[in-house]
Image (cartoon, rainbow, N blue to C red):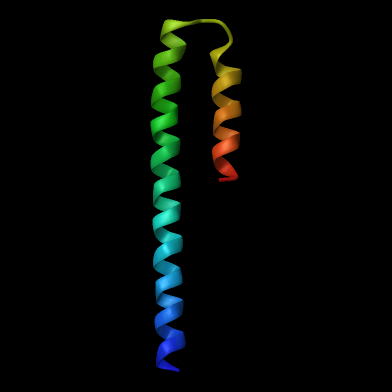
Length: 58
């Protein structure tokens, strides 16, 4: 019983860290996109949204 509880807690922790890193990656991507958008005004929004969609499924 104790072992299964421990395993569940570990899985929850791993899941939380994955969620955290995904959010961190997304915010980093958004920042990069904003910089790129300032540098090159050639449809950067499409490129950004495509990148963000890709990270949603990681």
